Amino acid sequence: MRDHLPEVEILEVNHDMDHIHLLLSIPPKMRVSDVVRYIKSNSGRLMKKKFEYMRKAYWGADGIWSDGYFVSTVGINESVIQRYIQKQGQEDRGQAQLELN
Image (tube, rainbow, N blue to C red):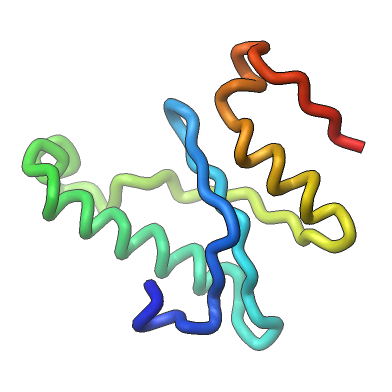
C-alpha cells in the first residue's frame, strides 16, 4: 500500500473472527471510499495469491470482502479508538475492561 497510497498512514490494525479494524490517517484530499476500495481489492488479490484454497472458495466472486464498511472520523478521542482496536476480540469475550468515554 505504501507504493500506491504513500499519504495514507496505517496507525493501528487488529481483527476478530469475521472482521478487521483499521485506524488510518487519510489526507482530506482523498476520498475514504477510494482508500477502502483500494485496501479491499488489493488485500483480497494478495490473499488469493498466497492461499490457494481462497482462489477456489471465491471462484467467480468479485472479492472476498463484503460490500459494506463502517467509517467514523477521529478527532480528540484518537487514543480511545486506538485502545479499542488494540483490545479487539478481548472485549468481545469479556477479557478486557475497556472504557469508551
